[in-house]
Image (spheres, rainbow over the protein chains, first blue to last red):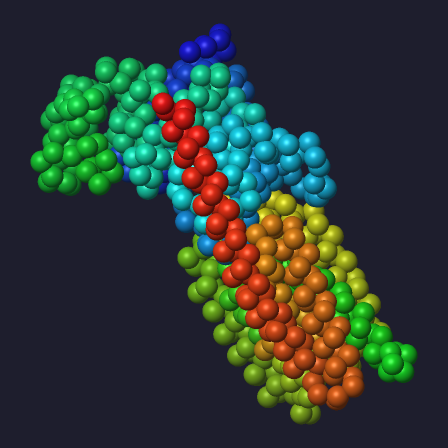
Length: 272
Length: 288
């Protein structure tokens, strides 16, 4: 981990209310440059909204937020963004390389003619994520895992300092979850800060330096071992929760907020 | 070939070319954003404009332009969320056409001109129509040139586009207005009812031939141009309606593209499959 003096993200007493619902409040958090932070929590706990705050798409209700010392602003080139995998139309006339090129200059007005340097940059990014062979495949025909590789290339081509990932593993099978996390961990090793929103901590347990847990308007932050304990989760959820480690996986028992499953992994289904 | 010397034929040809270029480009975004229903709705409201223009004694082209623009703006305001969009279009269209029926009933004379807008009347293009066509076409093409790249980004990948600073609302509203201008141009050539001939078919055919988004634009414009020019020529020499020929040639292009597309897609699929297994091998070597 290569943490320099200037933090990537600093939140001070930050609160976000949407309508009458308080998603989180008095959130104070510093994310060091080069850190891999997993943001964990049930559906509707404000994980995605936190990313939107950082992107300058959603103002805070109270408190302060800084991104590399600056207030957030729309279209900040310091960020790369990786959303969850989704189904593209099979006939959609967009190839893997076009999606990556969007990450380079898709937000710019006007035209630019295709250049050799531009194409080389796209190819280089595709090679970096092991997707050179997918450059000319229509994106609607890629598997979920292949699509997420392209997404990572699309984010990396903008040379971001911070990668914001919003549930990038959703609907991927275990093998592709693993390869996606490996790619992101490799970016992290090269110095990119990673904020990784997820409802399942297990796939990123080895890659994440710290975990931010958001639930029921409360929050906790720290090492996975410190946050994912029976005491912390019981305090955050305001209900008795047992955390167990089974075969290297974190299993949360008794988060009884609407679900009556006796044993459940911490997942959106379990707490919504 | 003597017919091409007539002014009305030259006017028709120029109007047809402007329309085909514009519709060919706009169609690629329409198919990418699944906006066929919006095209249909805006075009039908164009009929209201024609009927209203006849009633107050304005050129039909002006009426069409005014109402398609108003309809697009209304759809933009009412249908902010994707799920609301279709119901917003349906509501605006129904009200618009209802108004058109009233205008027809109030017209003192039988409104042939209003009905001609239903099936197109490119051979009746006047100099005024032509100038308006040129101005509208230039505005629409210039605007499209400025927003095309972020528009395509926002259409394909809205979450990432928004994160990278593309103003989604602005881009989609501006595109709706460009669509209104394009529809107003295209109803002159093929009419309200056959609007898909130029706004959907060429782009749909092009997407069957290639997955390259920039070649799609090129092919789409090519198909729209060919169908329009050849259709116009056939109509002149046979005296059958232009709209019939343009829609027929468009459709033939679509069928050909489907036949070609099945082959290229299959080849692409094979290539992707090979790349996939190569990628897997790479992964295996890395892991071992």
